[in-house]
Every structure is written in structure tokens, then in C-alpha cells.
Length: 102
Image (cartoon, rainbow, N blue to C red; front, side, top):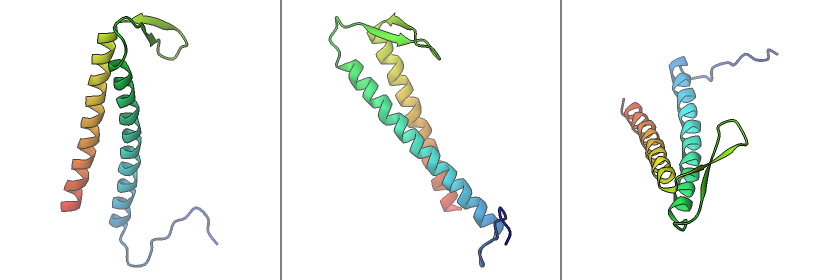
């Protein structure tokens, strides 16, 4: 028996399997984006509900160093990130719909 060789299922074309792979890939991408959106919503909600006198820190990328940051700036940055993630998710959904229509 051969290992690592995938035989096409009878009645399917190679083009069909390519569509299935891209659908699986976009599904995984949508799921990952969905999780990021949920996380970002929590961050925005937490920043929105902080008292005015609370301090906010920004973590230096790839480090355990934190710097004092402006709460309103952090809130607006995180809202923008959330909007970008939602737009990216919507783009993926729209591209899937156009593929289905074809």
C-alpha cells in the first residue's frame, strides 16, 4: 500500500478538491479571525469601562517590558484594530459568497 499518496475519490475532479482545500483554508482563517475579533472586543470593552484615573500600560512587542500609555489613545487604537479585523472577516465572507455563486 502506498503512503502519502492521495487518490482522488471516484466521481470527483481535481478542480473540485482544490475548491475544497481553499474552503477549508478560508474556514480556518475565518475561525482564527473570529477568535481575534472576540479578544479585541473584550479589550475594547475593558478599556471603555475603566475609570478615568486608572493607568494603562502598553507592552513592548516581543518583550516583557511595559510602558505607561494614554487610555483614550489605547481605546481608539484598539477600536481601529477591531474595525480592521471585522472588515477582513467580512471580505472573506464576501469572497466565499462570490465563489459559491460561480
